[in-house]
Length: 89
Image 1 (cartoon, rainbow, N blue to C red):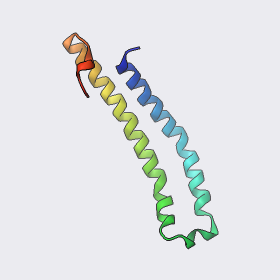
Image 2 (image 1 turned 45 degrees about the vertical axis):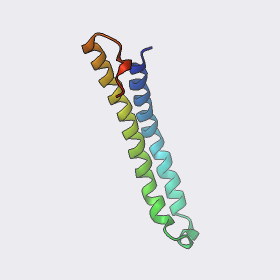
Image 3 (image 1 turned 135 degrees about the vertical axis):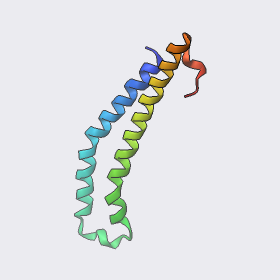
Image 4 (image 1 turned 180 degrees about the vertical axis):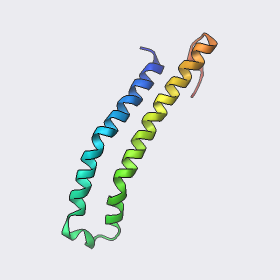
């Protein structure tokens, strides 16, 4: 399998994993936020509240980046008629 195809497939798999993991992360966040002793820890509630967004956006961005770079190098390789290994991105 071509390296560019592996990047595209890997990126799509990462996006699917992010979409399937998001409800699990939200459920865990809800469990943590329901804890009565959460107020004892300064700033933890804010950090836990924003953690699912950071995880989701990070995984979607990285998956999209893999898909983009794989498709871009495949297109450059097809235009040049040669191997795309000389392109860094």
